[in-house]
Every structure is written in C-alpha cells, then in structure tokens.
Length: 222
Ligand code: C5P
Image (cartoon, rainbow, N blue to C red; front, side):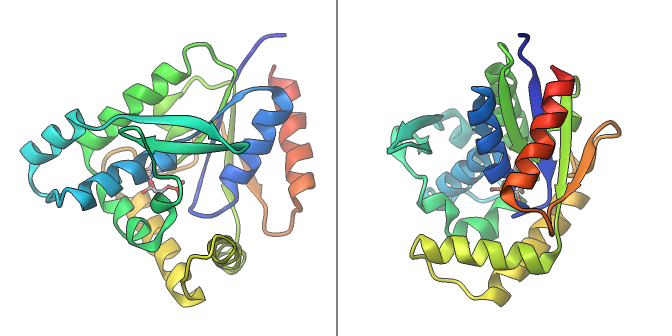
C-alpha cells in the first residue's frame, strides 16, 4: 500500500511522542521527534555559551551541529555530534531554554530543511509544533493534540521521576505553560492547528484508545 506522512502537532507534554512512537511501530513507519532536534541545538548553545542575540555566533554554531537518531536498547536516541544526548536534552535546564532558541529563524531554517529531507520517501510520523503548517503542509494526515494542564504536568513529572530526574509539579507546570505561550506567540512558525488537522484531546483517553483512533484515521488516509 502507499506510504503517507503523518504530522502530529500540539502543546507541550500532550503525549505526542508516545502516540507517534506507537503509531509508527504499528504502521512500520519511521518516527521523528523534532522537539529532540530543537533540544539538541539548545544543549549545544548552552554548552558553548552562545548568546541568543549574536546572529553570527549562532550561524557559526549551526555549522558545527550534526544531529541524528540511532537505535539504542530498543529506543530512539538523539545524538549531537556523535554523542548520545537523549537523557541530557530532557532535563529542566534544556526545557527552560528551548522555546527561546526555537523562536530563532536561523535555527528553524536549519532544522526544517533536515526534517523535510527525512520525509522524502514518506512513511513517517513526525511530531512537533509546525509539522502540519510548515514542514509538511501537504501531509496526508494531520493530528493536533491537546490535554488539560493538570493531566499534562502530572504525566511529565512522572516521566521525569521515572528517569530519576528531579523536578516539582509546580516547576513542570510552569515550564509547560511558558513554552506554550512562547511557542504560540512567536513570529516564525507559531504553534497552531492547521486548518485541515483533526484535534485529539487525550485528557480522558487511554493510550490504546488514542492509538485506535489514530490508526483508524491513518487507514482512511492511506
Ligand atoms: O516536543 P518537545 O516538547 O520536546 O519540544 C521542545 C520545544 O521545541 C518546544 O517547546 C518548542 O519550543 C520547540 N519545537 C518547535 N517546533 C517543533 C518541535 C519543537 O518549535 N517542530
């Protein structure tokens, strides 16, 4: 059967990556976590102390950044210049800086180009903020995910704790709200639902219910 592109956008910590991963597995598609790419760039900027005001330093830094994904112990890990940064990029200090970094047009141009190249052969599920609007406006299926802040902050805190990373519920909640605010109001590629995207509010849906719903929509789009 024909392969399609599935674009999965939405607010922070709505369960996009969990759904995208299981959807990709079921369909035998590639899964691409674009948030990890923005996080990896942010980590590099933090490590190299790049000022977000310094356009020249940013351009130079981007020239030195290679991001790729590799399978490690059954999971998809993000690599920055050959180093496994999967754990580091999920930490709070990266979460706090990623939205300001993602608002920089040079950063977006750099990553969007790579994301579009990954979609050349279709057969992929990509999650992010601007996949249905900017990266693949022609995607055959677009989903837009949302959930209540209560549900989202609880889930994200549990995720961090499961990884042995420390954070408080208030801190997590505040970070989600702040990122959504910056992501939705930036000038370049703001987070918004594409006109032809289907909204999934998963506050009250189990993993399996979401997957069944998405699979059903995918079958209809293929
Ligand atoms: O998906 P995740 O929450 O890990 O994304 C981290 C941040 O990366 C988002 O809050 C947003 O600022 C940025 N991002 C983006 N565009 C994407 C994916 C992520 O601006 N396509």
